[in-house]
Length: 143
Image: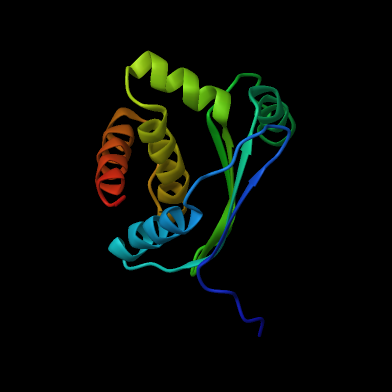
């Protein structure tokens, strides 16, 4: 049996100059989110990208031909493991459209990916409402 790492959370930038300040704070926050749902994180990788990079992934892996802010690839359910790709350009655009800070929108998108792995969906109005509520609760845990 293969032993899976616990709470191994990594952040990378791909084709885009971006880094999180205070990575440890983000890692602790993501663990808090998972723990609030009585789940554990195994290996979680966040990759921050450009719009074009994520568009190409959307076309190649999901057969979707549009820009998106996030694509997540679950690898394991218990403990939660997977890869989450986030377009920093989309996050900036979303924040501008929603008239909120970039930092708050980044928290929303980062939690969104983890919430998918926890079991939340966003394919219909009811699911979207539940996801938005869970995102807000997750953002409140960031301190």
